[in-house]
Length: 136
Image 1 (cartoon, rainbow, N blue to C red):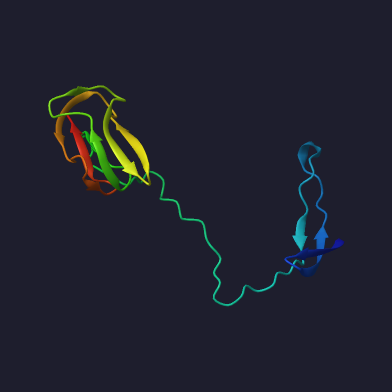
Image 2 (spheres, rainbow, N blue to C red):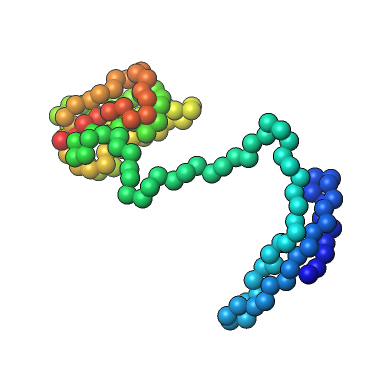
C-alpha cells in the first residue's frame, strides 16, 4: 500500500493506493484506489446521470414505415419550399429550407421519387416530426 495526500477543491485527503500486479503481456494495470474518502455532496445538490439508452432494436418512428414521408428533424420555421407537387426528385435533392436556431438547414430527399404532397408552406412554424413532404 502507498499513502498519498491529495487536495481537491482546497480540501486535503489522505488516501491509500494498492499497487496491482501485471497482466498477460507485461502490461501493468492502473492502480485501484483503496480507502479513498470523498466529502458528502451539499444538500440539495444532485449528481447528473447519463441518459439511458433505448433498448437495442427499438427506434422512435417519425413517420409510418414505407410512407415516403420526409419529416422535420427539429422545430423551426420554413424559409423556402424548393419543390412542387408532381416534381420528380432524386436522393439528396433539397426539398425544404428549415430555419432553426438562426441557421438554415437543407432538408433533403432520402430517396428518389415523385412529390405526392407538401405539408408545410413558406413561413410556417413546424415541430420536430411534422411531415414536410411526401415522396411516392
